[in-house]
Length: 33
Image 1 (tube, rainbow, N blue to C red):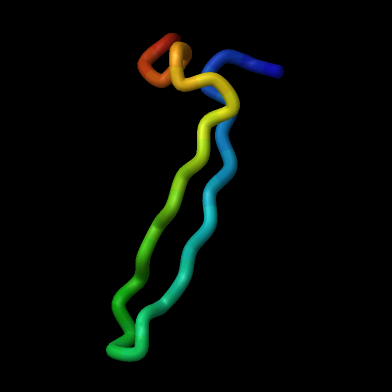
Image 2 (tube, helix red, strand yellow):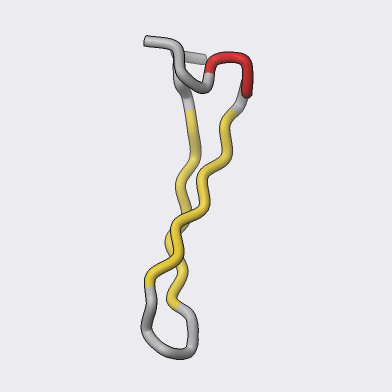
């Protein structure tokens, strides 16, 4: 994969607020450039 590779998912709660969830393939690369 690429440096910083991630998956992002957006959900809306019952009040209409957007919730963002991110998953990283390698947490060691979280702040890599």
